[in-house]
Image (cartoon, rainbow, N blue to C red; front, side, top):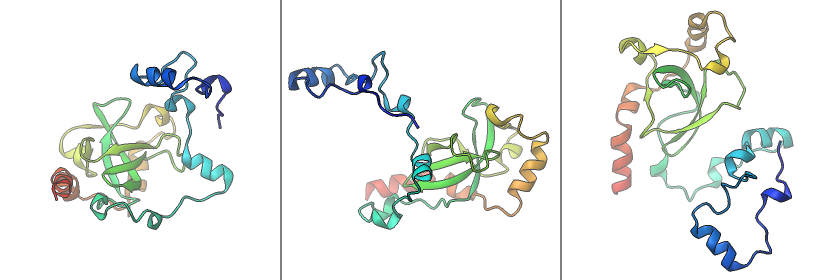
Length: 185
């Protein structure tokens, strides 16, 4: 796990005027050559919890989050999603967790490896029920990072999808309408 160095932290002794000017410039000092942006830090809550033996706060601790933000997607559901490294292809992903209209997904084939997990917004993401690629003549291809992991991906998918729960087409087709209705109320 990376730690913050003194050089990447903002100087607490700088004047309020300097801090305001930094904020006005739009980058707040995060785009400097030294690199202190959140993306470069690479903090991963899942890894942190695992390394420290801690556990995440249960969802019931966040009762202030409106029920209307909950989606009907459930952890473990499978769906087809555009491949991040090659958007013209798709791959099967598993819903790891949900947060309103956001889904944390893991491409099938990564097993328990959380490093490639990614968030997507169900309203704008290219998500489809399992089988959509076959019906629409779209290429189903594993991400480059795991392409060499299995010799027969068809056999892997048959094993992985057998007995699994797939996200229903009705849930994926009506997601934009449902979110808009919740926001209007």
